[in-house]
Structures are given as structure tokens and as C-alpha cells.
Amino acid sequence: MIKELYQYRQLLKSNVRKEIRGKYKGSFLGVLWSFVNPLLMTLVYAIVFPFLLRNSQEHYTTFIIIGILPWNWFTTSISQGTNSILVNGGIIKKVYFPRAILPISIIVSGLVNFLISCLIIFIFLICSGIGFSFNILYLPIIILLQFILQLGIILITSSIDVYVRDAEYIINFFISLLFYATPILYSLDMFPQKLRFILQLNPVASLVTSYKNILYYQIAPNFMQLGYVLVLSLFLLWIGMKIFNKLEKGFAEEL
Amino acid sequence: MKKRNETNKAIVVKDVYKRFKLVYDKPFTLKERLIFWKNTKVGYHEVLKGINLTINKGETVALVGVNGSGKSTLLKLMTKIIYPTTGEIKTYGKLTSLLELGAGFHQDFTGRENIYFNASIFGLTAAEIDKRVQDIIDFSELGDFIEAPVRTYSSGMYMRLAFSVAINVDAEILLIDEILAVGDKHFQDKCYAKLEELRNSGKTIVIVSHNTGAIEKLCDRAIWLYDGEIREDGPSKKVIKKYLEVCG
Image 1 (cartoon, each protein chain N blue to C red):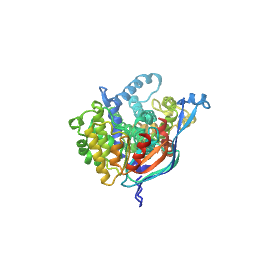
Image 2 (cartoon, chains in turn red, orange):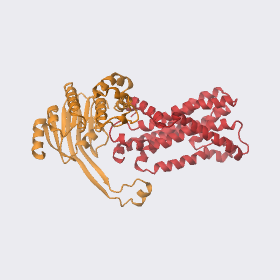
Image 3 (cartoon, rainbow over the protein chains, first blue to last red):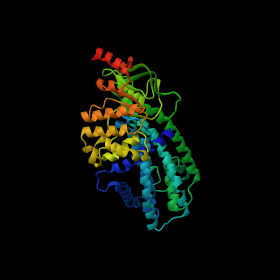
Image 4 (cartoon, each protein chain N blue to C red):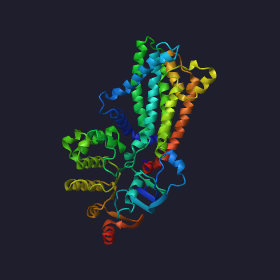
């Protein structure tokens, strides 16, 4: 499977380009929307939440934007990825190519987007006076973990969505639920130890906490948590590849 | 995919059955699936019934038969868009199929961009496409239109571009479904000339067409499918003559 994907790398490239460029075609701001959107979200939260949380963090805007941008990558990847086979039904019925290219290109285009939005994070870090520490070197590792996690999830969801169209709605519900279970607007320290343990079962929570650790608190990430995310992600990827390989044979007939 | 075989086989179809499930009220949602899980009317339609066939490298094979005899299904199975219910299909060498024109064209992208996109669907790398892009444009005779978005094309132009891409990807096996009917006489002749050129250079071609005159000239072997089974297999002249006697 991997060898074949490598052979079709050009398709992946042009598909990613299409995702990035084609998505905002016809809109005035174009690709800029993928950055304006999370920025506006951040603005809203930065205004509203200090009223709700009494002792909010210092540099609260920077604090939340470090959480929102990775979260944004996560949600767009999962929701678009889940749909990726369905919306490309036309082409799947007409040509053979490794179907996994479709979900993968969603994640890769999201990655490109996220790497650019890291610049926004850096600007906030500079402007707020927090600055950088060498802990930023952990950043690629965390990004890679998030990449694998998302790939595993959408290989499963995208192939199931072809057979049961409800998958899309169920997943969207879980995503909005997960938003509140992820320490984006708050920090996990606010919770008692026991509850914190449960919240940490959510791999996205561990990822967001790690982003905040290395960028905001400027400390090393919790390797126990990252190890857990790694094991879980690889497991999901393995399962995902199995499910996808099995279900992809029926795609052309089901769509 | 690129398994090299010592023998000179290109496509081996072994005991293939293909059955399509016909679901009348297809349950797409969970609710429907749960409520109607015993009530969905399911019928089966057997399109191919035990096809056995071997196509050697360098052969040009025509598939003939009336509508619904399973020709297109067989082609789709060979490209791996769908998979057989039972049996096995093996192909040796790089394979390109032209089942429907312009599959994967993007309306908003220019002709040139679509060449890159379409050729990459066939598994070419950027460098390989760079080498061919001029040939493709020349063959399509689109001229300056190549820089215009594909949505502005007429159906003939669309077809010319799609055919030009598919024929220039240098596949060893070329599968073609009834598609050449779209172009004008001049372009059709050009396509058949190109196919003959590919045939003479040793490529394997499998073509479905109702244009019996043209394929008789192009192909050296014909297979007549009737109701999901092979009725006749042999030199194209002989098979097509028999086919026309019965179904013509």
C-alpha cells in the first residue's frame, strides 16, 4: 500500500494544491480565510472568557491561540476528512487510484495551513513578551503525533461514512463535545487530580497541553502523555489502514 | 502492481463472477438501517458469470456485445475500480483506463493544470508529466484554449483533452470504453491512428466499441460477450462477422 502511495505522490501533491487553492475559490480574501477564521474565534473567546473565568491566565489571548490553531487543524481535518471519499464519489467511480490519497491530502493540506498559522503563534509570542525557549524544538514531534492521530481517525471515519452516512453527523457532534473537553480556553490544572486523569484520556487534550507547555509555559512536554498519544495514534492508524483496505473495494459500488 | 512476470501475459481473468446487489430503498442512515433492517428488498443481478480469459502482451482485443452484456463491468474490474464477487483478476504492467472522459477534471482549473492533475491520477510524477505536456497539448489541438478554464470548453474540446492525456501516459495496457464517439471525424481518425501506432509499438489494448468497422481494423482479436458469458473468442474478423449475423 505504501509503495503504491509513493508512486502516486504527484497526485497527492496536486490534490493538496487543489484543497488549499480550490477551497476558497471565488471568495474575496481567498486562502486568508483559513487564518482569519481562527483569529476571529480567538478574539471572541478572548473578550468573553475573562468574564467567565475569574482568575484567567496572563496573556490570555496568546494562551488560547496556542490551543485554537492546533484545534482548528484537528476539526477541519476530521470533518473534511470524513467526507473526503463521499465528495469525490464521481472520480472514484471512473478512475483507479489509491483511494487513501483522498483522506491523506486533507490532512497534508491542513498541515500546510497549520505550519503557516504557527507564524501567527510566533507573532503572538513575540508581541506578548513571552518569547521563545529551546523547548520549541519539541514542536515538530508534537505536530507529527497530531498528524498520525488524525490520519488514523479519518481513515476509519471516511470509509465508514460511505456505508453509513450518519457517521458525518455523529462525528461532528463528538467534535463539538471534544472542544469543551480539551484545555483550549482553560488549563487542566483547574481540575482536581482525579478528574484531570480522565480528561487526559482525550489525546487531543494531551496534544494541546503539550503545545501550551512548550510555547506558553516554556517547559518540556509531559513525555508520559505524549507516549500515550503515540501508542494510541499508531494503534488507530493500524486499525484505520485495516478498515480502509477492507472497505475501499466497495466504494465505487456504494457511492 | 509492477510485478514482473516472466511470461508475456498482460491480463489474466480467472473464473470471475460479478454480482451486483440491487437494493431498492437503500438505507443510508442509521435510523433507516435499524428500522428497515429486515425489510429492504434486495435483489441480485449477476453481470458476469464465470469469465476466464488471458490477454497477452501486445494483443489488441475488442470486446463486443449488446448493451448489458457485461463489457463495461469487465473493463471496470480490470482497472480495479470494482472487485469481483468471486474469482481473480491479475494485470501485469502499468495500466491506464479511459472509461469515462475527463474523470477528475476540475472545472475551474485551466487545461494545462488539468493535464497535470489528470496525468497524476494515472500515477505519473511531475517530471514525467513535464516531458509529455507539449505532446499532449499538440495532440489535443486546443491551441491557446489550453490556458482557459475547462468549464469554458465544448464537449468536443473536453474529450480531446481527456483523450490526449490518457493516450500519452505511456501505459503498457490501455483500457478504453466506448468514448471515441464524441469527437468529430477528423479527431476520431486521429485517435484510431494513434491507437494503431500504440498497437504497433507493442502495447496491450482492450477496447469496447460498437463501431465494428473501426475495431475490426484495429484489433486482431475480439471477444463476444453475451449475457455475462463469453460466447465467442477469436480473430476479430470472424467473431465480429458472427456477432453481426446474430445481433446486427
